[in-house]
Length: 229
Image 1: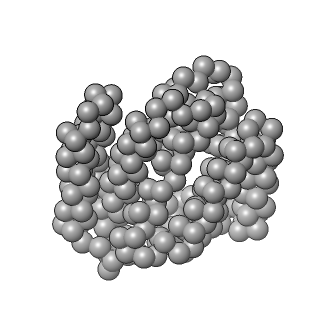
Image 2: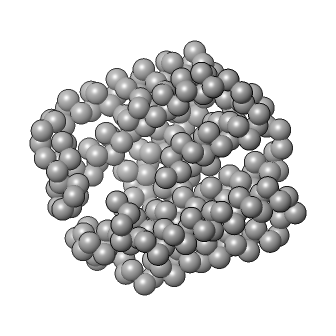
Image 3: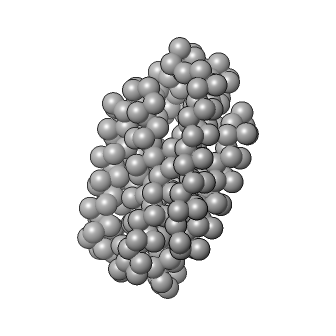
């Protein structure tokens, strides 16, 4: 849900006004960069996806697309994205490389570590927010942006936990032995409460409203975790 909403949010929060530039950059980050990253993630998860009742029908897991073809496609998409971002803004190209590195480390290492994986999954979302700020040109209100980035991180963690709750609920064998729904629920509620408390410790009404909206979204994800894929 937060994938590129945070990017757009960061861009307009810092007075970005070039819509065509925003669309072009989103194309580089979305279909190209993250399209390649998601393919790589599917390659890392191929054994797990074959056991999942829904994901086993994906082209890579089902064997419709070969491992080598998928890998070559992913690499080409990422290279094209980096080249285009270098043209748009070299700092965005650097940010894209950082996001790629985080995604690979997450899929290769962090995803296998209980609970730490939620932190790893949340890291990329505030970076996307700051990528939108970079595209806008400058940070207008650094403290406000930092607080919102923290809120985005917490919401991303809550969303990640809700997805794992769904995996356990659907009796995914890869997660049944790793997690219990009640402990995941306690953890997600704790992060939501943290967002709620933070909302009352900030004097900036825009940040306060943002935190409260994120609390509502977090609660929705906790309550309706059974329907999250």
